[in-house]
Image (cartoon, rainbow, N blue to C red; front, side, top):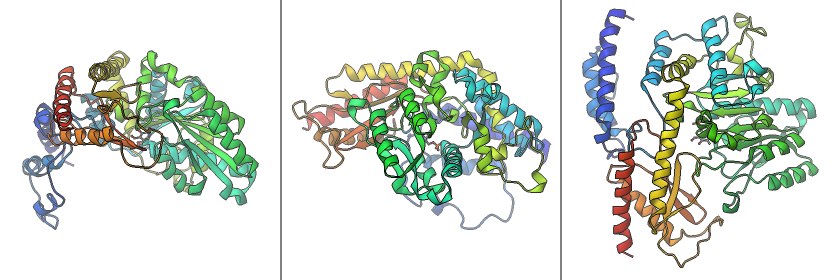
Length: 487
Ligand code: PLP
């Protein structure tokens, strides 16, 4: 590494990125490319000689950018956002620039302690219960994704249960969730050896606003226990992927307590909203949770990747994940060895990024950022409600708006049915989404649920302003008009 060269070349890259952000709005949000478009343009073997940064950036510009989905476009409303910011990017630069590998406290004391400080800051900003914070006897860790966080908690829950019932009961361990829980739970359960048939997803309904019904859960767990199964883990979600729905945390927590299950709360997207007090009622009862996770890389300006996992009893996870090796000895009550709080040994210095984001913007501006996205979503929802051709399929809770066409007014829709042909309105809705996306002026994704198909408009890309929402609405109306006059 040559520091003099670094100073010059890094400014070429930051200029390139700045220009990208200045112009990303003009790029089609979804690329118009066919499979193999990039491989056919690149040499099949690595270059023998070195190339200049300028020529590499030229390749990025000419060949790579046109094949990307422009996640940072203000017109990107698909999936959930991956928010970015100057501070997030600068924090990433520090993370990889310093390139420390803080697997134990001794391997990089400041990295471990900064992480402890910043996860407590974040927990306090969100109003999490003291019990999940280091300052209250719990503690948190930064990981790359919710999936990893869930695997760690599942491993701890599995081992805690096996200690109680014995290893020969492994096949009887059961994990509970709803049919709206992210697939990460099924994947994680598989990874820790839970039988796929023992991951039980309770069906949600429109009547329950797609939240996990505590009575249904209780009945199922009770009958499983009667049949000799051992409930070990319950996942509640605040802000489900499809709708942004919220499970009744307090009631679920009570069932988890009653049956001695680990209770995890997944707030991957919506968790960031809890820095604003007006959203905290959605996590009422969170003190009953054993663990809670959220992804600041989704909605809190903390460029990929950053997931915070808080644990009420970190020792339970450490007990499952601690792996020795003499050269790693040295952990103690006061020295956190984060290798025992995650899957891998090596780890990125994510704490410096989250710390940078929080310090650079301050709690106050982060609150404004969330409120601004939510108010744009609210305005978009009002526009939909003002037009008879549309139906908002789920009452918006955060900044995700779910809607569909509702032009066949006299045809009742079968919503909570699993199979069958899509309703006519749903087919038109799918057509509407495709016709919007093909313009490249916006990118929306949709969900099929039983016989309905609806569009999800996730508002929260960092560069999105009111004018983009107005333009999106005009585009949707124009396409809807074309579709509706054809029926
Ligand atoms: N949980 C929820 C509710 C999500 O919406 C998502 C992704 O959108 C995930 C988990 C998966 O997160 P990750 O990609 O960090 O594993």
